[in-house]
Length: 330
Image (cartoon, rainbow, N blue to C red; front, side, top):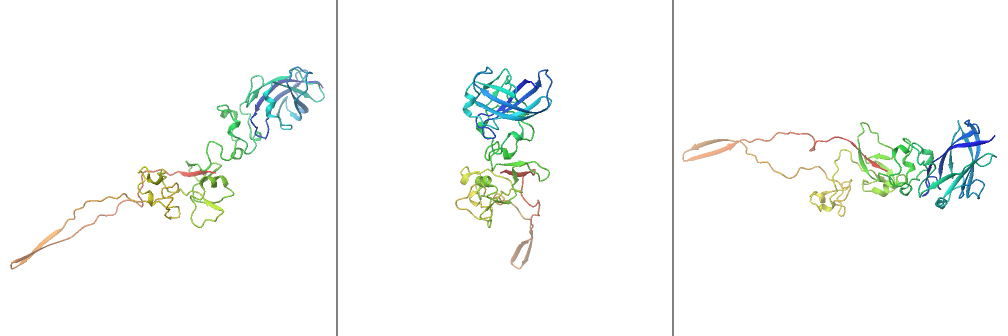
């Protein structure tokens, strides 16, 4: 059966080191017979790259053969997944040749125009919703893989990029960052933990341990463990190193989370202060009842009585507040 290609689109390629290990082309095509009837079935398709556009001239510089499942003419192949591309390959003008089974190579070859990070055919580049989780290797996304402002939200299907796809420490939120989470129940997003003072194993959360160390660990924590910050019920105060700005005048009273005074750590991030009123006074004049008594040439005056203020207020001193959950990125 003689077959022919009627549509070729290269969707996506990363040439600066791809998500699987080497550069890849996510290739979509449409396969019909000579009468333009779309085909369904399994076909052996050979893809070749040339530096010459004319069929029958020149030897391919890269080639691989795929067993391709075609449905109603449509198919998709990851080129470079069987035989890796060399990064330098795309410094040349290239033409893609396609051969189905024992048929001759289709004509014409399709020119691939390349750049440092992406290639396209017939003006196409990243097709909306074309990037799926199967295209992304764990811990493979690096900042140098993505040109500024080239990938937008409509290029990526919802919920396909997960934390394990991103190299630890790279991303919009660094490990150890803390934010408030407005949950009505104790639920928080993947890759985050509540700031509740829990003990964690250093090996299991090595990146977080590198970020915060034992700053929030209480006395008696095992040497292989460390503690999350415990921010339940606390207001957070901006760090004033050793009271340099004068905005934390009692910085020297700070302690670690176990209540121990720290000579070198006074004013350090992660230290604590208890609640306290600022020093003040109240003026007060007590009422009294005075009487006198006399006898002979002597008279005695005396006063008695007194009063006290009454209790008022709640169990603590606090500003107006709204409760939210502090969570930390790991």
